[in-house]
Image (cartoon, one colour):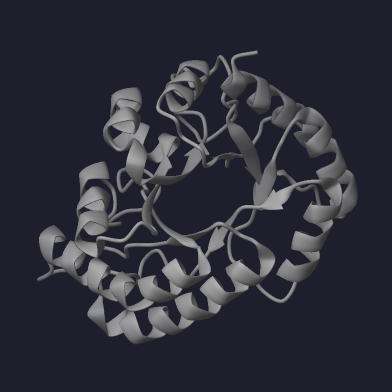
Length: 260
């Protein structure tokens, strides 16, 4: 089966551009879905416009924030409340996955303790996620360039959290850009953790720009590897394009991942 490709609305919508126009063009290119970052009262209109165009709203952030996240027990009550609300909203709108965030490292908290605390927080809401059929996708980010001190900066840390959660709804958001910076070895890693993959993000390295010939990753090969691994989730393009016309960027990204 061809990969289901999505794009981040926050990256590709031009100011003042009608959603209907963007979504119609994206559908014509071949996109299956759109995704957003933090959701608010406007999410209902986005989801409805996506449905009219034949797209799925496939991902949004479930709680704040990437610096004060799951690894901090002082944040747990707040995060649980935010995630419960987000899980119910995702179920209402047919959104299959929510982004969760580890939080930053801090003095006196080891990565192992952080993983235990992250899993403890997630286990409080996973019964609701299981009941309503919503994945909680722990996002991997780099701590070298973009997000200093972020704890979920290694694949194996996120794998440990998922293992401690022991739930089919505890998954990983593998961001290829971020993990290329931190680890490399992208294709072998994706194959190894395929059962835990809940969502994928793309961007060119270096610079988080277009996934074209100017950057170091072979996205056609990555796409083939995901297909061969049986990945059935969405692959979302989340980068800042060099193109003035962002639809050109979407067309090129779609073709690059599809190997066209």
